[in-house]
Image (cartoon, rainbow, N blue to C red; front, side, top):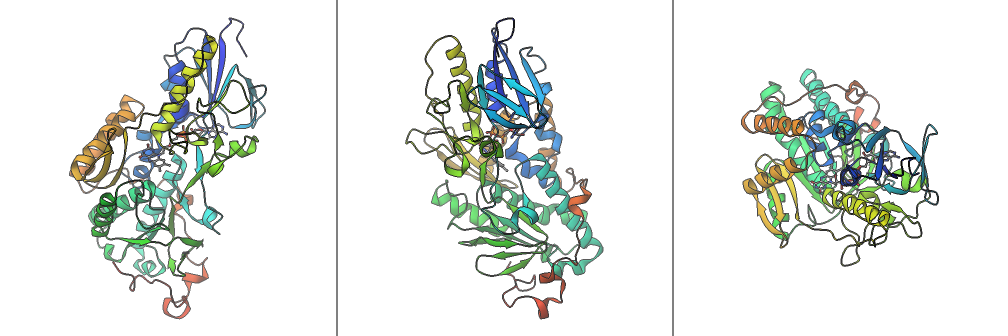
Length: 453
Ligand SMILES: Cc1cc2nc3c(=O)[nH]c(=O)nc-3n(C[C@H](O)[C@H](O)[C@H](O)COP(=O)(O)OP(=O)(O)OC[C@H]3O[C@@H](n4cnc5c(N)ncnc54)[C@H](O)[C@@H]3O)c2cc1C
């Protein structure tokens, strides 16, 4: 509600790219006060989660305190709370512990969550990569496996060095490349005598190419780089079931593994369903071209949680740049509304797409014409863009130091096993892999010795 001083109140749910973009645009505006609510007290830079998971960057390089971001903006108040219900009619949000905030304009920017497509066991047994918590959990699992194999190499026969990555989009490709770099470069330098030749990285995708939105030439480049780095590509293949100690692929192959990484897809954050917002494709909330919720005055839905129509009426992709720009555009429309001016349709400025494949290997389509570059140049462009997008100066400096260290050394990086829960493995809990391999494995099981490298 408007404050006693007459200022209009904007409530933003979610401090990701979209929420941050919106709050920054409204910061320092006389006549407006902002309440930014997030269930975490930090903004997380999702595109670099895989670098935390693979010990390239520290969690603090990619997570930034929201209070610090807005320390100099008196009109932005940050609240740590999980929103469990939204009343779009009264523009009131309620937290799981019962506190309410009522707004003159409400912005829902709650992002997405992993979509396991009802794959049996995937939710319980795989490692998604969509939050800082996921990234530190996965890092501890990966390091935990190396530590355990270092002490007991026989665990390799139970799949301890088999990594199954589901999804050949940017998340799957980037994490596959980074694990390959670990196995080819860092692990041999730090774990003396560990048989890295016995490691297998499987990258699965139901489609016929990796990084589908890129060109055919790019598809060939990505496949070549990953194959050269010993990533085993399984195109036209998905995962049917994930057990505690194995993954069953869609072709019936059973791979013994203790590390299935889920990059298989996303759906709207639970708040969309929990709060009864009308959901379209991927559970995302359909919005008008000006980012408002149909039929609800003063309610905006932005970023990954929204189905934002693009120029061809198809929804825009779930990208950081779309989220950031839509958050900023919602803020401009809110200010226009407060001043009695008309709202404008969201006009996404597409500056290109890029993905990192591993050390010195990246791919980028830049500018309006999506001019494509590969290799070192794309790597440099990737570094530049991510550096610009990162939130705080200290984060940027820390990340540059870590990246330089990684570029010129074989060891180092924050190889910290700090999540004992994720590293702990009961090797006896999966009958598919605890029996002697030759006798008890299904006939089509992939054993480390059989699998192609
Ligand atoms: C691994 C990975 C790699 C990616 N790589 C790239 C890339 O290279 N380039 C690119 O452009 N994009 C990339 N993306 C996509 C990009 O990160 C997203 O499009 C972007 O983060 C979406 O921003 P958002 O603000 O909509 O949502 P998010 O960034 O997910 O933020 C949502 C926020 O809402 C909060 N929240 C959710 N529910 C609640 C609730 N009920 N109550 C309170 N707070 C809540 C969350 O804590 C979070 O802070 C990647 C994504 C992932 C996961």
